[in-house]
Length: 266
Image (cartoon, rainbow, N blue to C red; front, side, top):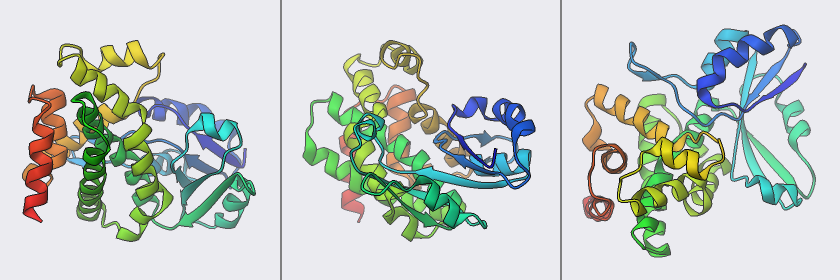
């Protein structure tokens, strides 16, 4: 195959790559849809999926991320996405995915930045879900969106030297807005709060997601690990609070305290 679209849970990435390697054309391009993270404890770093794919397959890699609700796309409603790609197949990729009047894509050379936008907005979705579980409305979610954007931008710049321009693409601001308003992760986090923290994430996931494995709460754990390893948790108070509520027994109401404190720090 010349173009391979890869969308599997991150924990199955390496076994999937082993399985597809014999079927790849010599000049194949793998387009990753993966939004999960992999944390390398030995190196204390997040390993982007594109890095793993390129190392295992020795081929060009692209990442496609954007605000795409598949049920709406199935009804031929318009949507957009960003393709992160810095290889020689950009024009072909754009032609492959563009459907006039239905699906528009734009290329960005920062493939890791595109990937990290897709992963980090899922972490932020938990904050939106906590707020919904507490009964708060759109005013609070608007604050979560704005403050999440700021923290995602700083994280990407610190750990991946990402330019802010990528966050203004569909993969960044576009997907952040959609995920925090209608994503599965925020619905799961809402249920977590409504259950009073008595149900683990994997239990709620089994009850609500029909076998789907969400990256949202898993990514929150990995982000916490890298912040701890680099002793910079307090520089990212929203990510710190998301983890504290979801995994350390902190009260859900502390998300509002966190938002207020971040605003007062500006």
